[in-house]
Length: 359
Image 1 (cartoon, helix red, strand yellow):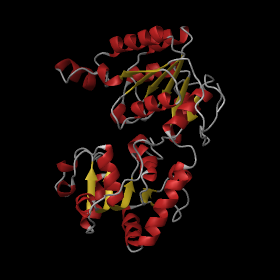
Image 2 (cartoon, one colour; image 1 turned 60 degrees about the vertical axis):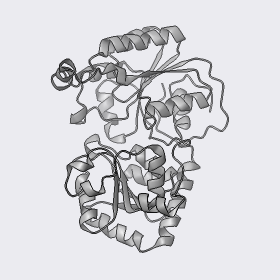
Image 3 (tube, helix red, strand yellow; image 1 turned 90 degrees about the vertical axis):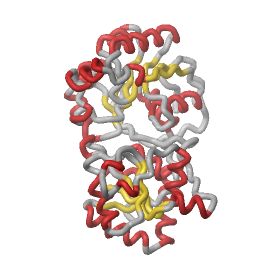
Image 4 (cartoon, one colour; image 1 turned 120 degrees about the vertical axis):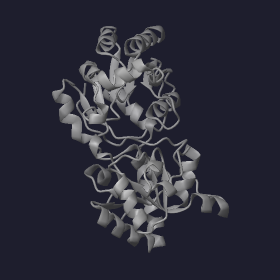
């Protein structure tokens, strides 16, 4: 295996790849599992998606016991794992690619390896995040042939945990979903419009940022779960957003806020690429990865390191329509011209793992 860091690559012509791919992930339209399935199909790779949600039964007493007292253990961990290995056997798959804290046990990954299946994981979450604590997953992790991490902060931890091949590979965007779609009528502009839009769940660490905007008098649009829990954010809670709703909301917003999850040791997030591809004027937390991905401050994005600086930079942006439009165009061009789709990421994974054709 090659120990390399990510370099932007673009696949201009699909290459034949007859060996089937078994993919383990969430098939929901906004999830990485679905994006990678679409990428495989675009690359003409036979793909079988195993829905990782099926490893978790309904919220029964047994499921609660497994979740809270057995280290977030999926109720159907063993049976789901066996179903996945059966799919590998039936399809004669050359590769098994799982996403996140995939419900695959160490024993199944061992069997897959003995069958010459290349075992890969795109580790979308940090397994050292306390909210993701899963001893069963940590036992399985070293059985992967290669682990792709979209965060630099945990790469050495992964190596110390027994992963021989750890590769930094950022998130991406899905061209069929993440594209500019501003409101088409005055009514839509009124419905979706905001000074600042944020799409994501109401994590405790995120709430102070949005409260600060609200207290400062900004018109805020909040999409995602649990914003109704807090009195200050409840009036601005617009619920969960479909892909079409999010495009309209981003297109109608003057600024799009991009936050990372510190408990996840994120340097960037899925939304980093998605907002850029949708043509947002991005105000982002200042991280090394954000600057590498989005470009210099004030040229294609604007950064902040504290809540007071966030408010100050926002006021600067709101006073300058031309600057905001220039930023939005620059960041979209930067991201969409450099091979940052999930098709590009999947091609890179296969190439890094030694099973893809030359890019």
